[in-house]
Amino acid sequence: MGPDLSRSDVAQSGDRAAVSSECLELPRPATLIRTVGWNIAESFGLPTGSYALAAWLGGRNAGLWAMLAAIWLTAVIRKVASGSVPGLVMISLIVLSVQTLAAVITGNLWIFLLHFPLANLGLCLLFARTARGHSPIAARLAAEVIGLRCPAVHQQRMHRFFQNVTVLWGGVFLALAVSLGALLAAVPLATYVPVWAVTTIALIGLGIAASTLWLRSVTRSLGIGFRFA
Image (cartoon, rainbow, N blue to C red; front, side, top):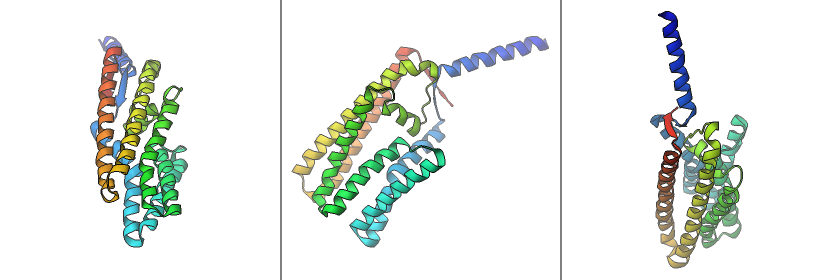
């Protein structure tokens, strides 16, 4: 009986390993929330908080320099600690560097606000540039931001999805660039920032919802399951 049970246990372990290797992996809900929250905090929360505090203490330019220092410090720490800079941090670093330098050099509020649509246009071009390559940026962000792990057996089949969803996000950022540019020309500067915030959150939310539903549709059509890592 002992050897039979042993063989049975081995077989069951092999079956579990085979199932695991065929599933996309996500962190458990609590870990997933922590992972997403940490990425958002270091990419957007820390620079924004630094800007708010420094601007309150020393004015707008002080806030801008503090925001820039925060994102560069985050990138340097990440590079030293892990050997690479996360995609969201790199995107924020590029966007905030351009916005800050333009705002400080010109001293013009309209020029500063103009970089909101321009930054989204730059993100559109970045996503479009990687969409048809070997490493679409959506795949990297999915791994970094939500901890999605794709087994090697499915990487080739999922590659087309990540290319297409990168194109989708290029379209989202293009829509943001066009709409924010139009709003900048149409609404008073005093109300532009809250309108920008609502528009950005709405379109980003739609992009996330569309990406999630599309991923589920693709995995179902390919017969790929999900499991918590």
